[in-house]
Figure 1 (cartoon, rainbow, N blue to C red):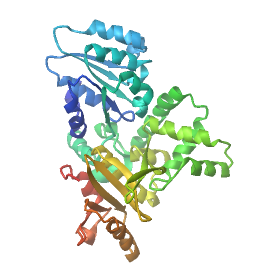
Figure 2 (tube, helix red, strand yellow; figure 1 turned 45 degrees about the vertical axis):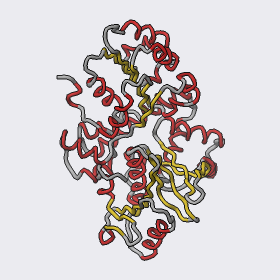
Figure 3 (cartoon, rainbow, N blue to C red; figure 1 turned 180 degrees about the horizontal axis):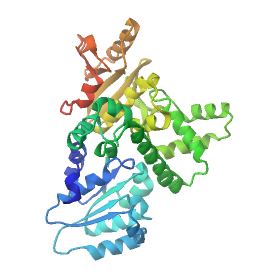
Length: 405
């Protein structure tokens, strides 16, 4: 049996990469380790009937000899079939020194259709993109969404409510492919984070203080849904007796983003129609990371809601910002292909002031783009208000695959 027979299709990402197949560009899929990049590459390679597929997993020791660009180029040249179309797949391409030089040469000579994955979000920094001359298409991949977890449950089985499990352990595919208890699942997530830090931060950037890096990561995870900056983290660390510089804090935050552990959401001034890069929030790439490192803290539930909505919108292909209008906060402004939606997350509405604030912030926007108020349990608020605000539960918002937000 082909090992891909056991893989689950993930249409939201397949649909993003399919239009680029055979276009002569390098297709680059980035995402945190163990989010499913390799499985998607395997499925794509399997679909290429009649094609000579050259597949390299750079995590394997057997491919260590190819970890410089000249060796890679010689290997690919030797593996080309001149009588058939050729496709090159490379998992974790950042493990090859100078990979961009080899791929530029392959593209220039039209030797292969190229697909690569990488765990570093800065694979397309100016340093690399200059070498490959804009000849690339990029897809950001995330761990499983709630809707995808439903697919995995159907295929692989498991116990307990899928929604509660998703909120409790997150969406790393291995947790849903081989279902185990919550404690073991979160230990697996901790292991993924540790391997990511060792390989994609310590190994790549040569950091000298892993403990400080973990302190910064835990601080950010404890503030999901709140504005945070390198200065605020620096001040907190200094006040607790930690000796650190502002530059180090800033650099460590950048490394956590580059390793796809954290994602930054900048603020969009709705009236001014501009992005404010000096004011932002951080979210975990997967909510399970927060639970694995800090434990499940019920008081943080509003931040958990924001995190899963943020990553859901990213997975649907939106550019996502924190919003602001006339001093009022809109949790998310999401844009895609000239369309925009606004999303306000509210864990519960127990008081009239809360209701007035949540609805009032959306009503203050004033334009005609769709507006959503997402509640953990919508109750009597489910439906559409007179001003056109769509009220729904978090589960329904995450599960509706076909709704074109």
